[in-house]
Structure formats: structure tokens, C-alpha cells
Amino acid sequence: MTTTETTPETLLTSVDPATGEVIATYTVDDEEAVRAAVAKARAAAGTWGALSYGERRKYLQRWESQLVADSEAFCTLIHRENGKPLDDAFLELMLALEHIAWAAKNAKKVLGSKRVSPGALMSNFSARLEYRPLGVVGVIGPWNYPVYTPNGSIGYALAAGNTVVFKPSEYSTGIGNFLVEAFKKANPELPEGVFETVNGYGATGAALVRSGVDKIAFTGSTATGKRIMAAAAETLTPVLLECGGKDAVIVAGDADVKAAADAVAWGATANSGQTCAGVERVYVDRSVREEFVAEVKRILTEVKPGSGAGAHYGPMTMPSQIDIVRRHIEDALKKGGTAVLGGPESVKGPFIEPVVLVDVDEDSEAVAEETFGPTVTIKTVDGIDEAVELANKSKYGLSSAVYSKKSGLEIARRLRVGATSVNSVLAFAAIPGLPFGGVGDSGIGRIHGEPGLREFARPHSIAMQRFAIPGMALLSYSRSESTMNLLRKMVPFLHGRHK
Ligand code: NAD
Image (cartoon, rainbow, N blue to C red; front, side, top):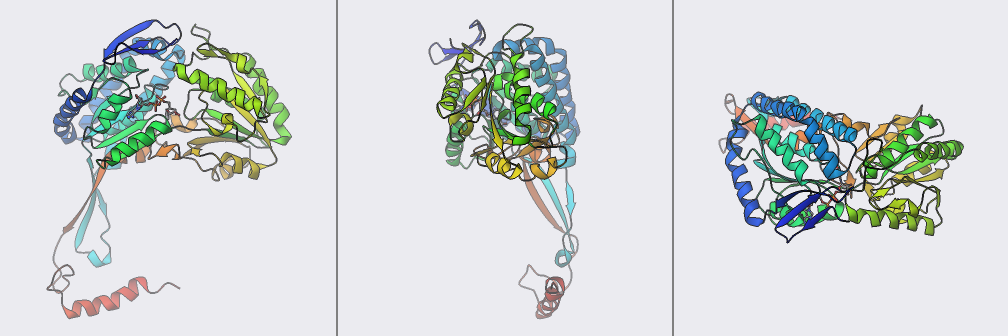
């Protein structure tokens, strides 16, 4: 069964991953169509960029309200095209709205004109730091959180005054287009081109990278991220890359074991495990291992995938991922791991039941590579040092979680990642003021929060001479010998007194 088919390459058919039923067919945008969309966005960039922060906030808030008004239809579409349960679709929409609202509200504070101290030697100047929009931002999105994830870029880029051309994943084309239609419906007086989509597969995304946009904000796999960065280098187009993860949870000896097990069970399997910052690995202290493993198993025994009302999570959205998940489970078992819940037989077509693997070799694919399925590996460690060392060994460094009653913050500070939840999982992603993004193979740059707004703006420094100081013309051939003598006295006073 496939979720997306080409008939031929000029068309993209979106289908329900649970049933194979056709939802809609879209025309694939080729290079010329992508360039036309970018030209439209370029034409609108002047108008949108010249609005005040307050005006842009009003348009973004109207978009929020439109999405709320249309939320039932939108969540039904998310459920059908992506497979996730309706409640999860609603939670995703709610989180995306929180981010759009935060970006709209805080853009002025973060990017508005600010005075900077000119320093003693330039005290006859006033100095200002201002931010300008980049122009047109190309956003390339994934399918796993097709509303929340791209809005970490779209909402923030728009709030910073850029126009946006969005290429949704080929597995969430309808959802991406719904977002844009809602924006247009909410703001009919805006010119065409403030927020547009281009539809298609990787080739359409590649055309967007080559189209002359002022920045590419990509969310997806590390392999594609590397390809995009290489292509963007040709035109020195800056990139923001939000890529994969292999997030670890550390369960210390003093953890609330039941709470940790509850969070790990959910964090590993929610959204069928198709979460970039989902729980993939656990390092649990030997003193609490038995209780922890038993509790995770007890909870997940009751958790079932499906597409009906009672399902905890849905099908795998992308058919090719099913084989990867099966391969990781098999590799874990071949390399000495044990399945305490499920196994290769848990892979049932597009639905994969929860799989809990213990004592898996750290070099097996199930520990080293992103599985992106409802599976989790649990390894016993002797103390926090070992847990931190193993957690940090991954080539990925997206996020992490720590369970400890006394030392959560201390352990969190030792982790080589972009974000950590202490005594919870994934909490950082729901706090709009906190930046999100990774190190290593997890990507470059940050979405969300203040850094997330600055990603989509160009700092512009302005130094303005308020008055001339006679004889103190440093930046002029009229500089006098007495000025230099004065400076020779001042510099040791300013910088030469530190012992
Ligand atoms: P993917 O890399 O296959 O595709 C992502 C997007 O890139 C799609 O829109 C696709 O059409 C496009 N694309 C493919 N080839 C391209 C090319 N050569 N040039 C330009 N665009 C191209 O990823 P996916 O399967 O859609 O998403 C899953 C991945 O995304 C996982 O690795 C997951 O961890 C990651 N992810 C990361 C975050 C984050 O914030 N760090 C969030 C969600 C998902």
C-alpha cells in the first residue's frame, strides 16, 4: 500500500495512510511554477515588510481565529491525510496557534529598534540595532507534524516581515494548502503572495532552494538537509535545518519511576513514534531498572494503534518507514537485545504495535539510527556519568529528558542537545519562548522563541554622529597628534589595568 502515488510525475495523489483511499490530487509545481510563486512573494514582500509589527500581528491573529473557526474540518483532514487521531490533530493545531501568537506578539520586542551604548571612544555617536526582514523565505516541511513543525518557521518568518513560499511534504499537501487558504480567507485585503504554497515531491523543494529566495527553512531528514545545504551553497542562500533526532531519556536512581515510565511510554509511541524529538533511547539506573521496565511494559501492553475513535495512535504515515522500523527491531534482537514487549511481529501493515527492547547493543541500528516508529530501547547504567556519556555519544543532538528528584537540572546541563525536559518529556516544544533545534546531525539554527524570530531577520547596525568633537576626528585624515597623545593615555586607562 502506498500513501502517495505519481500518475505521471505531474500529479500528486494524496491518500489516507490507514485505508489507501484517495483524498485529493494536486498538480506538481515544476521549476517554472516555483519561480512564479517566488516572484509573487517577492512582489508582496515590499507591502508586507513595510507594515508595522502591530499591523502584521493583527493579520496573524485573524489567521489564528480562522484556523480556530475551521478547526473541525482541519482536524478531520489532518486525521485523514496524516493518520493521527483527531485529539492529537487538535493538540497539534493548538500548539501551532500558541507559536503563531507568540511570534506575532513578540516580534516588535525582539526585532524592534534598540539603542546600543556607543562606548567611551565613540561617545559623540548614537548607536542603534535594527532588524529588517530578509525578503522571501522558502519553507520546506515534513509530514509528521504537518501544522506545528512548519509553523515554527512560517509563523515566525511572517511575524518578522517576510513573505513565505511553503512546500509541504508530499504526504501532507492538503494540510499545507489548508493553512495557506485559511490565511488568505482571514485576510482578503492583503495582496497575493504574502503566504503561498508550491506542491510536489523533492524536486519541487529542490527548485525552491534554487529559486533565489532569501533563506531556506527546512524541516525533515538529515540526509535531505545535507543535500539542501549543498545546493544552497551555490547561491550562498542561508539555511535553517531542523533535522532528525535520537533522543535519550535518563532515569536516575532518585527518579519518580512511575512518572518516568508514564512519560517514556507516551513519548516513544505517540504519533506512532514519528516525532523528531520523541523518546528513542532510555538509560535507566540499575537500582530502579526492574520497576521501570515493568511499568513501561504494563502501560504499553494496553496501548493500541488504529484509525478508529479508541486508537492511541495511528498508522505509519510514510510506507517506506515501516521496513526501517522492522529492520531496527530485527537488528536489535540479532545483536543480543531482548524484546520485553512485541517484536518483529508487531509490525502489522501500516499499524505497528509498541515494541520495548532492552539491553540492545549500542552499535545496533535501533540505538544509533533514528527509528521513527513506536519502539524504545532501554539500557541499564551504573550511575549518571555512564548515562550522560552514552546519551551524548549519538551523532544526533536534538533534545532529551531527565528524570531525577534532586539533580535534574545538573544532569540536563551536561547533555549535548538543543533542549531538555526535566521530569517530563517534550515540554520545551510547547513553550513558545524556548528555542528549538539541535546540534550535530540534528541540524543548524533555531526555530521558536527570540532566536527563532532573529533567524528570519537581518541585523542592521546604524551609528549616527550626534556632534563632532574638535580635534577628536578618529575617522579622518585631519586627526591630530594631540588626539593620538590623548588616546595613548586613555587606552591603558580603559584596557590596561586588569591584573
Ligand atoms: P524528508 O527529508 O524526506 O522530506 C522533508 C521535505 O523535504 C519534504 O517536503 C520533501 O519533499 C522535501 N525534499 C526532499 N528532497 C528534497 C531536496 N533534494 N531538496 C529540497 N527538498 C527536498 O523528511 P520527512 O520524511 O518528510 O520527515 C521526517 C524527518 O523529519 C525525520 O528525520 C524527523 O526527525 C525530521 N523532523 C525534524 C524536526 C525538527 O524540528 N528537528 C521536526 C519534524 C521532523
